[in-house]
Image 1 (spheres, rainbow, N blue to C red):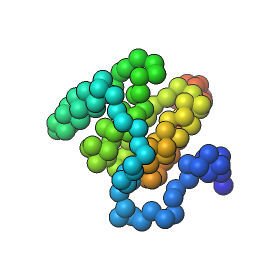
Image 2: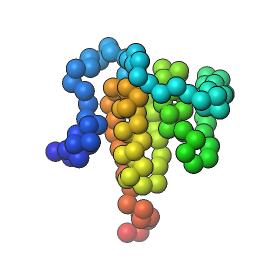
Image 3: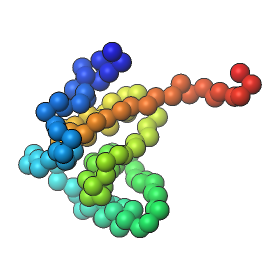
Image 4: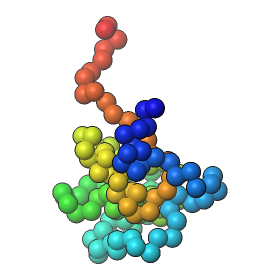
Length: 121
């Protein structure tokens, strides 16, 4: 089974969650956003509510980008989110942060080899 490593990390689908359950339940132990994170979240949410909007959230290292992304997805009622990270370690760290914050929805990690593939190969 390919999901086995994710299940060991506690990232497998929660079978208790029904299809009608929200992926972001009320969770009293969640971290509180700092002022700069609230401003970033609010600006991103305002922008992404516009039709056909896309965004790239840029912030310095260790400023809470993952937590802000979680809260943006929650505010928008997102059913699907994409986080692009350069390493497997950061992918696992990101997925664990979503779980720690109470996200119960499905998660999938898509990893590339870093090699380019041409049509001639």
